[in-house]
Length: 153
Image (tube, rainbow, N blue to C red; front, side):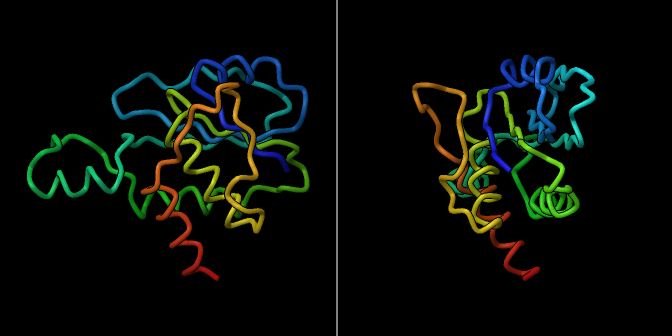
């Protein structure tokens, strides 16, 4: 199964035209509109999840009161929700997993890198829809997913 990372706008477009069997993880910011993903007969599953694009650096800032209290950090609950969904996904019937966030630069690459590693494929085993290669995986969500997967092993 190939994994594609996209931004929200491109994921909305892909959801309308995708001909292969696929699943999607839609990551949005709490308070923002959900991605407008079209119903598609070829989509086998969809996970919607919300958290802010915060990392370990922000955890330290939060401890000092430097991050607003309404911000939702990626946490163990999010990691387990993603892992539960991924473990239940029938990969034999899924040609492509599309993971998107607002910009496609941090949260979705972090989840993609973690799932590739959990699947034994190495973290760089995903495609990115930005031809500039403009992404930096969110280390916090990536490490939480990998850590929770190891606990399950």
